[in-house]
View 1 (tube, rainbow, N blue to C red):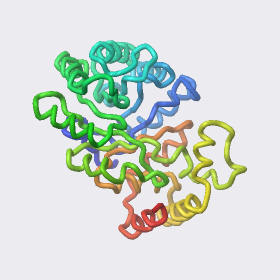
View 2: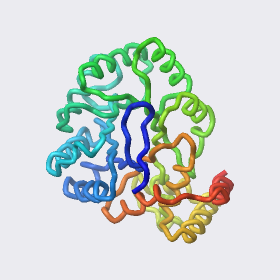
View 3: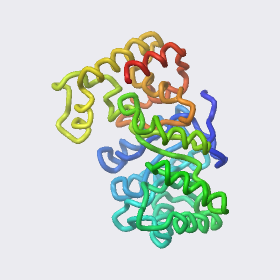
Length: 306
């Protein structure tokens, strides 16, 4: 079993691969989501990442029902995000409080382990938003907080406010993968490192492109996911897949495993957040934590994706 990793100074220790639940209640039924969750937990997974806006709250409800039916709450950390639900938009103190109460109800738990601000809210002073979370932490409804897609400037502002007694961000979730290394590799990465933020990148497989099933236009599905994958087709995309294939063959694993192992080799990355539509897909994702890439392999992937 891979060594568990810490999310900042939150006290939360988890398996270094988080299960994304954005498809629960949307493209996956409750039964299908349960199958994926069962496999994830069976392989040692211990962090589920969701949001109150995923399927208008149905994702949270499915996770709550699963934890209740399986009795897994004591083994599973829950991260959710607020700010985008149609009933609770933005990060005003009133919306934060109401959104957290609704998320707790859907999840069937007493405390959210990791609460993300789901994007910034330029209409509300960050001090007010953090103050609202401070009250929720005191009330025992929230454990720790994180930021989703915050700019470096706002992360720095948040750290200044934390120095004056407000809650400190422990985690940052942002888009980062072999096909989209920017903008994270730059100021965001530097700030995350300086602040000791645990980075939990989403879209770690570039919408599934790095799984290797899409290599030509004829492979692309006619949906939103397919449109995103199609953007990666081209000289650079083929170069990246070739490098991933070669290294995957050397390790005897799937291409997706190597793409995630590359992320885990990055100093600030703690646990990529990845979704699965079938239980058998979970195996390749979880295997990433057991693959240790050689320095030459990391350099090869860096060069191919440059």
